[in-house]
Every structure is written in structure tokens, then in C-alpha cells.
Image (cartoon, rainbow, N blue to C red; front, top):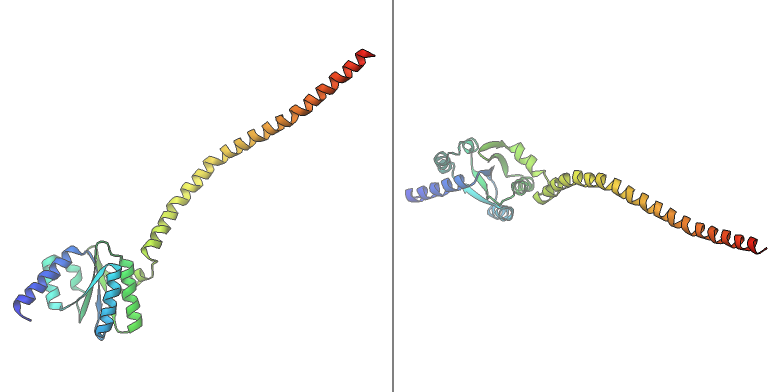
Length: 196
């Protein structure tokens, strides 16, 4: 690789490291090109770009970008999944963990999340989480449930009052015709008594 090419690669990596605050590093040694291509496709669908990098160039780029947390993860052949701003970290972790299980070759080393190093076990725990849409639904459900309970508590006395008023109106409505019938029969008896 020419010196100019190396400088271009370091500049590109530096820019990626500055723009991406979350990334996952894996050892790809032993993966075939079709397996790497399949993994890249899965990661693109999840909002990440997989880059196979030389550690010496990546170290220079990390130092230039101030990404010191990444330096500890650069041992042996490295592939870095740069998660884009609209990417789903859980889906990326899941894709890498699935690939590691299927190939029994890929090894997740860890990652960097918002400037802090995370371990390989933390990445695997992320992979066990439900997808982002499901998590959003769960959070929304947790927010809405107490509000629904509050609304039910506020509405219950009003519903009881409404039911009480309806019952009393029905009771009064039922009493009125019988009182009218009694008054009619009373006046009829009084009229007969007067005639006699």
C-alpha cells in the first residue's frame, strides 16, 4: 500500500471515528468473503457499516480522532461495525452475535458506546434485547398504563353518579303512573260514594 493510500485510509477512518460515537469491534479471522459479505448486508439493514481495517492504521486514526477507548480492542485482525446515527445498536449486536454463533469463527471483542468502552459480554447482552420497535412499545405501554388507571379512577365516580341518577329517575318514573292510577281510582270511588 502506497503512503498516499495509507494517509487516505487514516483520514477516512478518522472521519468515521469522529462521526460515529457507537461501534462494535470483532475478530473476523477465518471468515470467508461470502460470509463477510452476508454479514455486511445484515449490518447495512440495521444501520451499520462493517469496515475491515489494519490495526496500525486504525490506531493512528483513533489517536487523531481522540477515540482512545477503541485502542484497547485492536488486537489481531479487526473488523469494526460503525453504527450510524439512525442505526439500531441492538439489531447490529444481534447480527454480529448471530454470525458468531453460526460461523463459530467471528469473535466479538467489545465496542465503544458514546465514548466509553463496553465489553464483549455487554454486546452479547445487547443482542438479547428485543428489537427497538418492541422496546418502544413496552416503554409506551409503561407510560400509558398509569394514565389509563388514573382516567378510570376519575371516571368511576361520574359513572356511579350517572347510574344513581338514572336509577332514581326510573324509580320516580315508575312511581308516577301508579300514583296516577291510585288517584284515578280514588276519585272514581269518591264519585260513586257521592252519587249514593
